[in-house]
Amino acid sequence: MQHTRYLRGVDRRVAVIIITAACSLFIGRFGGRARPIIVDPLGRIAAWAGIQIIAYLVIPTIVCLAFGIKFRDVGWRTRGLSAHWRPYAVLLSVALPAVVLASFSAEFQFRYPLFDVREGAQVELLRLLVWWIIYAAQFVAIESFFRGFLVIGLSNHFGPNAVLVAVLPYLAIHFSKPPLEAIASVVGALVMGSLALQSRSIWLGVLTHIAVAGTMDVSSLIQKGVQW
Image (cartoon, rainbow, N blue to C red):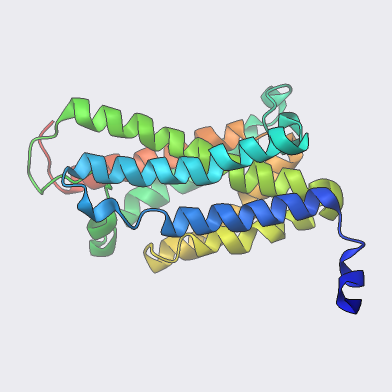
């Protein structure tokens, strides 16, 4: 068992976070194999979002409780956020116009919105609102996992390099998206990870992510000429 000596210097918290991250990424990617049997379109995307919430929020939360990792050490703090909002405002001022421009592309229209609406159809506002609430919860999970659990959670050991650690898995979950969105995810991971590390909080990132995703959905619906 000579090879086991190389593991003796592994930090316990790093090992817990990395192993949990691997399990969460696996569940997030493959946990939805049964979704095609759900007939209702809202049910299908709600099931997908539910799997993401379990993988990226519920499981890490259970692990934090089990191993004594404090929630404030993985980004769940709100104190001092008023000093960090300006970079996020600048980020939104760049990202939102870019999203609107991207919404004119056929590839964007094919992918979005996730809420299935036929071109020119009447939007069912109640179902759309239900979906947006679920969708927002999914972004809490995403930011909590990538910017909180990975970046902030690993920063005590890796320092700013924790931002780079989180880039690769964040890119990987965007491989099914349009190429430009996948490329943008690398930039987003670097910027959002750095900002989260400065504020030691995920919440401004959550609001930013929801604003961008909401703009993507609304822009796509407008391009499809749906009836409100």
